[in-house]
Image (cartoon, rainbow, N blue to C red; front, side, top):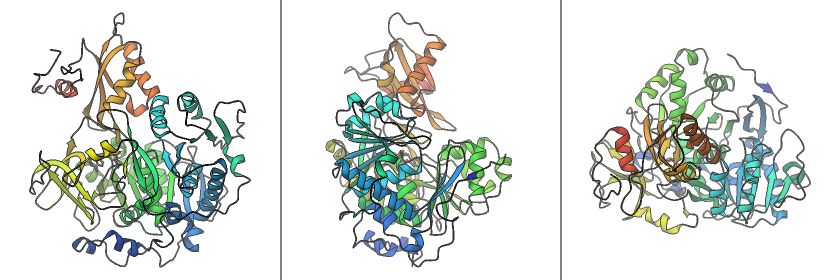
Length: 591
Ligand code: 6R9
């Protein structure tokens, strides 16, 4: 059961204890709950370098004092269990090389740079290199297929993609449909990559490309509102939308990393999220590194033994993960975790889906720890409603708003309801991490605000003590294992299959993954339903989009229920699937 982690040559000695006055909070954070400080005050409290600007690369890397610069920033565990240490200084200097190389390529501020890479150190170095040039960085899940990539690269008009030899074929498959794409940078850790000189899009070998570049780079002054990163997120209709963020978001990410994740400078922290998801940037890059914390990154896939071994072997002290992962661990029983010793583990948080009470009770048993549920979104950029130390956990509640955030539930006229009611979860957030717009879709952005409230798209209730309770989504977006999937994306992929005439996609409740995707399809004439055909169709979606977007169930029906204007009525499909009343079907075309 014990896993052999191979120590590769360390760039810096093993994680040491760093004594520094920097980054310690002078006030108990929950004193600030009674008397909430302004974001500006948090800024002073966290001692972030306002005067030198907000560039997130300065806040996270270059601006740290020597004691931090020389310690491990990235404790990297490869998929094959090799271990590397990379100091803050090393990441800073290497990202300077990337910034110089990007500048030499002619990169302009706000150019969109995509990172389609496995979780390898070069992903983080390239990310900061791009931020130093004021480019907009778009990290993408390595699980994405060509269709999912095409939607995003086309919408953003990507100019550069960083990728790896294993993932590059998926970029090659769509490159000709992305005319803005000028350069593909290939990170090949195993061999020396040989660029194809006659490829239609310029190809560069990462290492040869950065080798001649200086390790010095002067970051231009970066006002807080300078665009920094963009994450695509799914809605009920249409293609995924790019939520644009800014450099000033760092203050909210650092404040919540300190006061919710409870991070301090001697922690070893593991965020299990990929940077393709906002959790993997806000809390897998920005917040922790702004605080000078050592982060563990595991390149490999989920496996209970491996995860427990990592927690034990690397003395992880703070762990940020997701309910589906916790439930999958639970499924393997309590004896397995009890055969490990998690001596350092002192704080666990969760995000992405409701955290069920059973998981919290299990956590108390096997880790002897509370699991703190945190609620937020791609759009909010940082934790907005949360459980935290000092606030007794109510099993199943998301906790209370973070100081500086006003949250409430609204009725159908967008008017706040009294405590104790259920309604649309809305925020008034002054947090500098709130998104700035949806890329090329300002009207969609504006539609998210009513009467001065930001509409989250979730339904919630709030009890008389001010604790928030998640009820569900207001829209048709499916949350499967923490991944938000737009039904329209899956329906579009389905109808690309030669056998599929039309498709309607819904989420079905699932005890482990919160929801699983169910597709209703009708077949084109000449096609006959067989188990092989349904399997082929499911795998077709998987290859085009991603594994998490693959329907777990496909049901063939004669025709789909549609409104008279031709819209597929997912509400009716869902009611049918759950055996519930179908409600008002007067506008139905199909009966
Ligand atoms: C960070 C992130 C946001 C949506 C959100 C909600 C669901 C997130 C939750 C939760 C219940 C929690 N969600 N945290 N639901 N309890 N603690 O997840 O961003 O991928 O944009 O998803 O996820 O529905 O609106 P994102």
